[in-house]
Image (cartoon, rainbow, N blue to C red; front, top):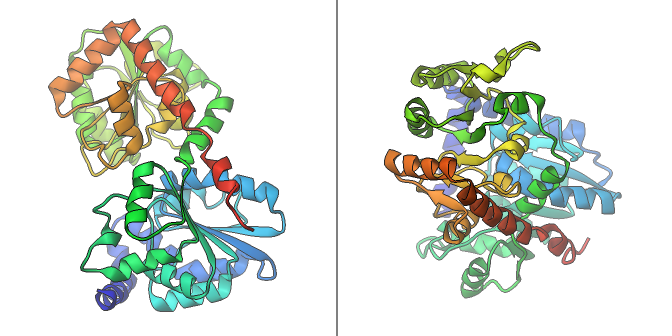
Length: 411
């Protein structure tokens, strides 16, 4: 399997180089970033200073890493921090706006790239976040005896790295000096696989969203749009979510407002949402100083960077992509104390499962279930209050992972 993995990576890297421009914008960004990655590293790294390297996949994992980055930045001033992203959607958004001293793409996990990257960076300590684990990097970090940690890890019995036919992947996990995991089940799974240096700390993202909640102010346009109505905020939506929501908005007699914040904000996607709506709507980009937002039923948030703060004014939140591979961030609305609705695929997300069991989250499978959930929450303020209390209590109980991690670090 090791040889097949390395051959496939080399082929993929070559195909990206030859044909990357023929694919979507994200692939083009990724290709351009990979082409310039070592030049960027040479430019932004101080090669005479000790380096702590954090690697994240995209924006979600960045939010999990951020509280730890900030703590280390404040406590260990002799170190510089390198932050690498795998996904363009993370790198392009945060490349110029992080506490890290240097931000870069992670070079593709070929043995040649790994050697070149580690020879250049020479990290003293390395942090991976959650699940973006690259075996060639891990094997080489272990070989070089570099202190390596995993933050907010989640493991199940059927984790890809534990497949019997591929012991090479499991062996790569031996690179970790310590696993900081989200739950006790992950600890038990790792212990069963022979890994003993495991500490249950919880999810550092709760620390991040708690920080945001403490300082979040209401946006004027949200207050003006909401006025005295019930506000439904649909965050990080995909087409399936938008189909169901538009149907409900178009047909419900209830007096409520909706903000839709789609995962993709290109004009084509926004136009497709607008085609589904039979009520008055406005894009955020169309709001002027004298715009009367009271006449609109739906506001489409075609910008980024606001969603985690506007949850402050929500009465109900719908989280998108539950009909896809995985739901988006539910910690952000939970910390504000808001009842949450999402699609059916929550099985990979401990916080969603916990909140569903506790009663703060409703997981729906179809339009009828969405209608029932929204009708109940819109019509029953006591039910909204009850579920809001459950989500906020759960979020606050899970704050503190960063401090637990810091007590175990050996820098």
